[in-house]
Length: 123
Image (cartoon, rainbow, N blue to C red; front, side, top):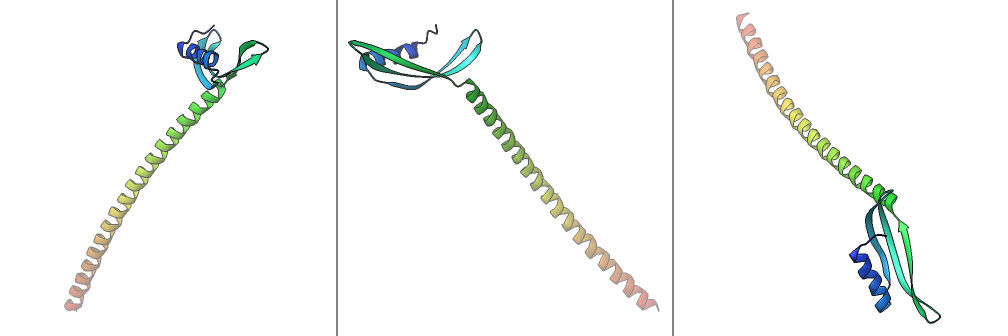
């Protein structure tokens, strides 16, 4: 049997106050592996006896799936942020290249004008 002080306190609350416990989460290592369990308990009256009805649900697979989804969300978020950074860097490089091309085009046009002017003056 698992000895968890929090679980014992919750079950004592059910027994003494007849206060139900809902979805008490337990993460515990068992011989078959680590399990995540949800426990609910409530006091019931059967004849003259007060008993505790306990329901336990194994949510290990759901917890693992949640962790996989969270990890995948983080990976996708990081990938998206990296992609956005690369896109911004590419846009900046394209803008710089476009400006350099404009400067070179202006210089080429200026050189052609000078060359055309010089050849007209020679003839």
